[in-house]
Amino acid sequence: MSQIRPVSDLRNSFADISRTVHETREPVILTKNGYGDMVVMSYEEYQSIQYEMGVTRELRAAELESETTTERYTHDDVMAGIRAKLKAVQNV
Image (cartoon, rainbow, N blue to C red; front, top):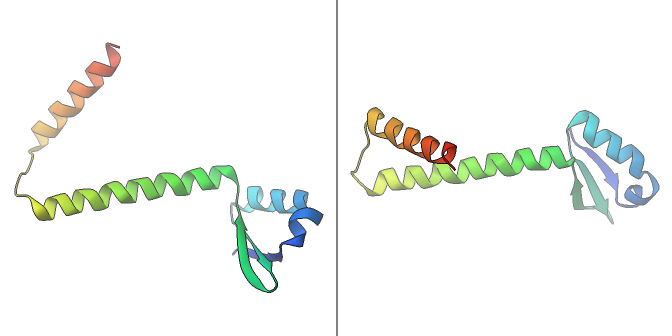
């Protein structure tokens, strides 16, 4: 569960906040005047979220494409395309 702390803790207890976000992999929510102001998280967790968001965007795009076209690919077609791309990368 995320911790909620005043934004002044970022200045006064930076090391503790840093340790918390790395050890728990949970963000720390910082408040200003009693309202949410910022979220602090480890860089690794940020990268993970960005990756998941990218995958989600790609899946949404694929779903939209599947709803707007009747073109379909067989397993063999997909695998042939993947093999061709891998071969091109290996030959570079």
